[in-house]
Each structure stands twice: as structure tokens, then as C-alpha cells.
Length: 435
Image 1 (cartoon, helix red, strand yellow):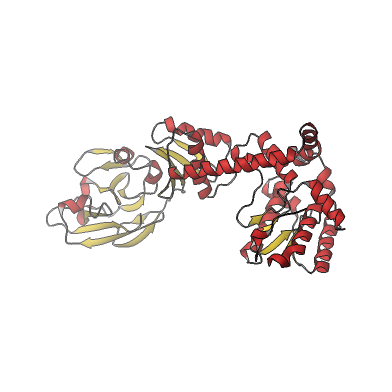
Image 2: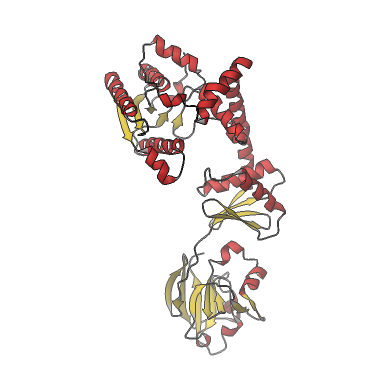
């Protein structure tokens, strides 16, 4: 068995070792070639608390082997069945989350530059078949690959080559009985589907793995092209519309991932996002992780909704914070008619101190708010904001000065006709300090 590990020269590599044939072969192979390539080697074992004494015996076996081979070992343990129940996820998912949490910790603490897992050609073929059977996209067809901090040196190696290697080198290993339990989908694919494919098409697993590599290359190119559609937006991201659905979908996924959503979205979510291209302006979709997608003119804006702020601040001079924004109220004896309305690019507004009722408060907008716009008549605040083309996602975050349901000023936007400054008035400046 020959595996190219020259690209890992002078790296600190931590091998994920379960005690099975695959991971023991990988640990042995890297230990044999470590000195030649200047590799600093260590290992990590995660005991999932699933198989009782057998699981504990696996941990003891890995510990003894690492001690005999002079390899530093990091060990972790958890009660994954309890974790699965608490998080309401499958046992497989809980175990995987636990494992990769341990691996991430090793990388984060600088104990290794890379974590190596023993995924092989057959594992990749199983993953591709599993993803395709679930209706995955081209990304799912890409199967298993290296990613930041993680390497899979055996990805082009077959299971038969691994078993031959451990036999030829007299490497002991443990067998996990749950790997034969066909109630788990992947085990069923491994035990029944792949052997049938190999019988019908020789080297089926190898061919599927080669297909997955080509799929990853195509997918990477499409993501690269879709990046031109993604823009930063206040509190989120904007994706410009495109009549090329593969690019638009990927741009939407890029925005969602940038906001922390990795796997909770579905094909239905993506199709609904595509439908926004022909929806009316302001149409919204609820997405995972408390994210909203709203159609705004030439694209879709993704933002995370904020809870309504019910706090009120009585009108006075000073500097205040409300709904994540900071603003100042200052007396000002120097003003002009133009400043009264728009101030400094709309961020500072000037009003008559004597025309502001003592009962006025700063708050966020509410349903039923009315606004007598500067130089015009009274209308619903909602309609005024729509006329000013202020996106819906920004409206709930606006700070208003109001007396009951009558809005006297919308900070950063406009003052009401009712508090405009007249000759001889002492003016007050309402200055928005943060956007």
C-alpha cells in the first residue's frame, strides 16, 4: 500500500484512532513514515459510552498500543446516548458531534496542525450513495473530502488494501460489533448495496469515488461563480437575483452559512428562496436559526430578527442606548431650516425644545403609530417608511420620539411637522451615533 503524505511535511498530525483496522493501519503507516517527512505524530481516542465494557476495552487497547509505539495519546469520553436524548438527535449524530468537538478542541489548543481520519474509498462511496439516495445536491455527491484542519490520507485506498496491510504488518485491531448492525443505514449500504454494485460493476467503489472528486471540482467552480452575487448588508447579507438557479441557490447558501446556518436548511427552503425572485417586494420567508429572507428590489436580504424592545426612555438631554443603537440629545442654538429636516446626511435632526411634550419618550415603533411628516400631512408611520423605501427588516430597529401613538421624530430619518423649529426657538439636536 502506497500513500502520498509528502504534502504533510513538518506538520503536527493527530490521528483519530478508534482501535479498528482502518485507524490502526493509518496510525501505523504515519508512524513508520513520520521521521522521513518530519511529521510530529500524536493520537486521539473518543470513548462514546455506547458499548459498555467493549467500548472501555477499546480505549484500553488504544492506550496500550500508543504507549508501546511511543505516540502521545489524548483521550476523551462521554455518555452519547444521554447526549442524544437531551439534544433530541440520533445516536449517530450525537456521537459524531462529540467526536468532532474533541477534534476541534485539539486543533484549537494547538496540540496539532491537522487531524487525520481513516476514511477510505469505500467510506466515500457509501457516503455518496447515502447522500444521493436522500436527494442531495451536487455538494452531497461530492462525498468525503479534506477540509480546513482535517485530512483523509486513505481516501483513495480500498478496504481490501487496508486489511492486507494490517495482515502483512501484524497490526492488532479491535472489531466494533455495531458495524454489522444493518439497522444503521450506512451499515446496510456497506453490507448489501456496495457488494451488489461491485459484483455488477467491478471497482464500483473506486468509480464512485472518482465521480465524487469530479463533482467536488464542479461544485467548487459553481460556488466561486456565485460569490459575485453576495453582498454585505446591514445586519446580514444580500444576494442579488440571477436567472441561473444553480448560482442563485449557492449564493443563498453562502449567505446562510456566513450567518451560522450549516445543515438545518432543506431543499424546500432553497426552492422557496428561488420563488422570491418573482414575488412582490417585501415578501418574507422564515429560515432556520431565527433568520429571515426578504425580497428587496433586486435581491434577497438575509437578516436575523431581533426581539421587540419594549423599553422606553423619557425625553431629556443626554446620550442613550436603545434597541442596540446609541443616540444623543443636545441643546443647539445654531440651526437652519434645512438642518431641521435632514441635518448631517439624515443622522442629525433639529427640533423645537418647547414643542416636545414632557410626556414624550424614545422607543421603537409600534402598530398604529401616526406621523405628520415634515411639510406634509399625517399618515400611518408604516406607510411613511414604505414611501421612504426603508426596508422592512430595518423598520423594527428604528428609534422614534413619540407621545402616545403620535410619532414626533424618526431618528436618522425625519422630524414631524409638529416639532419644527421656528425663529426664536431653542433647538434640540437628535443625533444618531450608531447606524
